[in-house]
Length: 221
Length: 235
Image 1 (cartoon, each protein chain N blue to C red):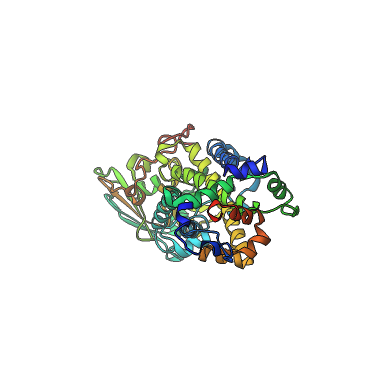
Image 2 (image 1 turned 90 degrees about the vertical axis):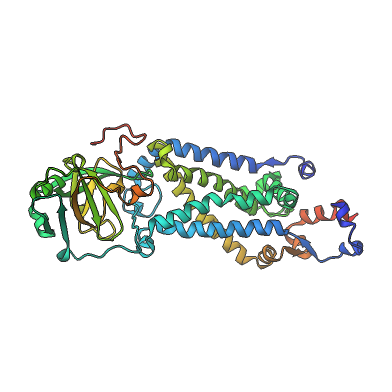
């Protein structure tokens, strides 16, 4: 990274750059591909589950095939984005999702009422959302494969897989609705998933620890 | 990111724990979900359970763009093929035949099950006997009013006492989403055999596999035999 930064002649002024990179290109690609595939999965899930929607849409086999193959493809953009040299920013954020300070755990347990902690790049709610969606993909894919290739599994497992797949689908719909509402309520953060950047001002208000991390980056020394 | 951990002194790998917990719960749910579903289904039932996961709910399938709307007065069941007396039965004529009531599970091949569904209709065998099956017939093909869905049974399967042409289920006339006014109910087999909006019964020598069978589902769809379920085919 240090080598790459040296290419910029006005490096010293970059310290004064009012913008920080919150999501690089790879992360934005991963987010929007994931969002698109989830949208297809949730939309096709509606007729598969609700009789009222099935009455309007029908075409069971076609909808099943779209749903199944979208689900199978779902992890691909994420895995491609995480792999290779281009995925370093994304991998760093996944590590942020994984590791929590005691303060963040306290914040979560109090449902955000404990406000006296310094926030990292992501607040505990955002981290939990990312962890939940990421883990859901694995569980939904596993149970979905049992339902699609049912011949390979005992009937009891298929009933169990249906149960888990349906229950988790409801939880995912709630989480995604919450994610979208939160995004619409926080316009600056929302813009950053389109443009990739966010102001230092925002970071000093919402992500103080991240701002310090960014200042401490060796390439800025 | 070790630096982040060190700076706080006591970073907790919450992500790994969330992932392992969800994967573990998911696997447990697959293995023990049948029992859980049974208990939840009994608690939620079919009322509110019609919407919620875990309830004993039907999933409504249609392979065309809509549900065929058939007025009971316009309903006709054609019985044709290798029979001595081809027939066209109205709903009234079906209702005038000896009726049989069954209380049995509806089991989908993908796993969902609605326990103890009340069914009422005419034994398929009675209809076949009334039409007079010719010697060469060995199988029965079924068509749906939707124009796409089809099914088939061997003659001996079709002659079972728990295979009926149903005109009542769940304590009422069969609704349009459930395949009304008349559908097939093949109690010992997976749900896709119980063709909805039944329009035609045709005796043949060799049956063409039905719609779902052409898309990979087993032709012999015994609930007890295909995989897993250990109870007898006739519950």
